[in-house]
Image (tube, rainbow, N blue to C red; front, side, top):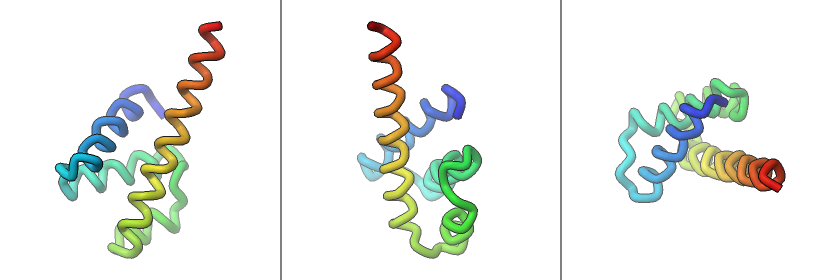
Length: 80
């Protein structure tokens, strides 16, 4: 995942939290995870068919949190 994608995930996550995200932005959020092999093809196809949309968005939020936690841990170790 590129730094640009990570920054965009952060922006979109904030929009989800603030309940200001558009459908196009939700699609982009899920697409970033799929494109980077974080979200399975099966889950992505379900999302595109409007199946389990809320569960898939929550999964992406959780996975994003794990990714950002890993980045913070790595940065803390590198800065020691």
